[in-house]
Structure formats: structure tokens, C-alpha cells
Image (cartoon, rainbow, N blue to C red; front, side):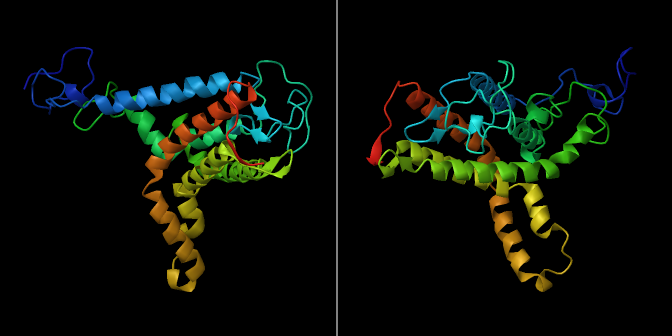
Length: 273
């Protein structure tokens, strides 16, 4: 075998132990479609969510108490009257601070450090690796043992914050069952409720939740209740990837619907009240 080309690392496709073929990979299928789709999906959500987070309007329907998850909790004096379910804690925010800034950093941290999302953007954005039998564009890989990727280990702590936010979103959905005549139920309530259920499914199916419920147990027989909970969480965990994508869609749909109703573009379809 010939020696590696000058200035190229002796690893990966340039390793002297690799068969000397000019192609970086012999795969002929559409191996690039999966990372491309992931990139487009994540980019679409990031653009929409960022735009809406700084939009500053169309997040609260006073008549039916609809509050989009992107702005919950709204604790600033800049929030629309009635939308501050937890009260007004802070003064007016400048335009460059989202009204939902209290929860957004923790939710972002929870998603970014999620085991599934790590897999998604490691492969699609960082291309580490892009796909099976496709070489990485970098020569060395240190894993999550050094800065900044070692921060990924904070996921278990973000899980607790995400659970608290899910409780808050549940409260927002319950509060929304109020109308000018008392109890009310409309299409917005249905969307908010389904979104909360999906958010709980994603949060509870988290790997950290499995660890919290039964990860440290040495004898399941001595802890039947925790073992049962761990078993149920494990069943949900097998669909964690699906819930990760579904909740991105449900969050966007919920926010978009609330925005349309709040702006007067459409009228909420009411079933009761």
C-alpha cells in the first residue's frame, strides 16, 4: 500500500490500513436523504420557533384563555393582560428578550441534550458519522469527554425543568376550558390538550426518566411499584424518537392556531360555550 498523501491524517479514509480505492464510500443508495431530511426538519422548526418567540403578539386569546406554549409562563409586564397565569414577576422586556424567556432556555437545553436529538444532529449537522459506511469529514473524535460536548451530561437536570414546564403547560390547558359563559370547549382546547399529552409522552419517555424511576435499583422484586413505573416508561422509551418529532410538529401547530385566533384571522370553532 502506498503511504498517505502529504498533509492528510493517517486516519479514516486516509488510513494506510484502508483499501486503496478513490471513492470515500461504495454506497450507491440514497444514504444522504436521511441526514438531509433531518436537517430540513430541524431547520424549519428552528426558523419558525425563533420567529414566533420574538414575534411579541398573537400568543394570547383572552376570550377563551388560550396561551401558546412558546410564551408560557408569561411573567413580564410586557405580557398581554390576563396571560400571566403565574403573575407578573418582572418589568417590561426589551424587544430582544422573548416573553417566554423563563422556560425557553430550559426547554432548549432539554431538547439539545436529549439522546435522540444528539443522534439526529450529530449525524446530520456535524456528520459524525453522516451514515453507516460513510466517512466523517474530521480525523479525530473525542466523544462527550471534553468541552463543549461534555455539557451533554447535564441532560438529566434539564429533565427536571422540562417536567416542571410540562406541569405548567397542563395548567394552561386546563385554564383554557373557560369561556365568557363558564365552562367552554372548542377546537383550541382540543389542540392544546393533545399537545400537552404529546409533550408528556416525550418527556416521560426520556432516558433520564427511565434512570430516575428504576435505573439505580439492584433488586426489582423489592420495589414492585418502581419496577412497574420503570416498565411503562421503558415501553414509551422505544418511541422516543417519534415523540421527539411529533412534539415539534404539535408545538408549531398549537402556536400557529393560537396565533390565527388571537390575530382575528380565524374564529375558534366552539362546541360548548
